[in-house]
Amino acid sequence: MPLVLARIDCRLIHGQVVETWIPHTCADSLIVANDDLAGNPFLRSVMELAVPPAIRVRFCRLDETIPALAEAERNGERSILLIANPADAVSLRKAGVPFDLLNIGNLHCAAGKVEISSSVYFAPEDFDAIEWFRSHGVSVLVQGTPSETGTSFDADRG
Amino acid sequence: MIGAVVVSHGALASELVNAAGIVVGRIEGVVAVDISPDMGVETIHDAVEGAVRTVDDGDGVLLLTDMFGGTPSNIGLSFLGTHRVEVLTGVNLPMMVKFPMIREGLPLDELARQLRDCGHRSIMIPGEMLKRKAEKKPEK
Image 1 (cartoon, rainbow over the protein chains, first blue to last red):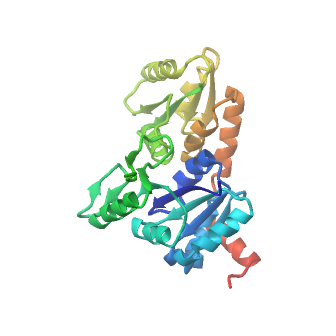
Image 2: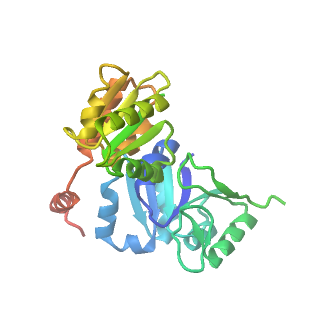
Image 3: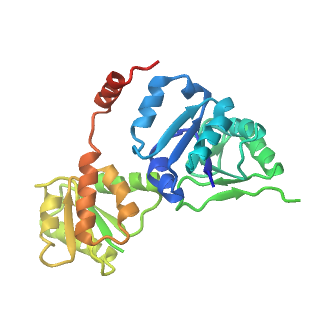
């Protein structure tokens, strides 16, 4: 299975990903699909610093994600796909990025947002995105770390 | 399962445990002992001993202290002869985060050595690393 985890995390690469999800999924590749970072070499190199050398890191624009995943798959890599927000995740799924389970680890708090867990807050448009996923066969699991009991929004199987 | 007692000046111990919990999720078998300036040596000793007993299920306990030579460390060392403990000084967040990830299957002394090495390796100057990287491979 080449794509071992698809995760929405507004912090993208950080301690939880490196210390828990990489060992938990036995991943050896991180694919960060983010238009802002793809155009910022300095932030990319800062974010890459704390990743162990054995882990391959790719930064790509949203529209480069499918070729990046295909390349990782050809190399036999086990990839974690990191996405900054639900809207980007919807774009990726619409473009054909294959995931039936979507993890949400961090979406920061802001005015008007609803608390889902201690690290995940939904804006109204995030609820719309979750509904879109449910009606398109994608289950969403809000879970910061693998040991955390998650909150799930299961896909409609009707 | 090897337990851990984190002992520090002030509330550093509690907050290190809290912070590590944010990164890797709640850690089982860990107790923090915060030492305030008004506590006598005997009180501190009793608090640490109680904490050790709480987390010791027979596999031993790692005493993580904030600073070699400080009171938490000195009192921690006094348990070496009487309890199945290892003392590790200068605890930092990377060590706390690594502890639950690697403790399974390791004997107490080896766990202490690996966490010490992890703590050493975790102190760095990222600005220097970025400079070295830029010299090696100029960005297009």
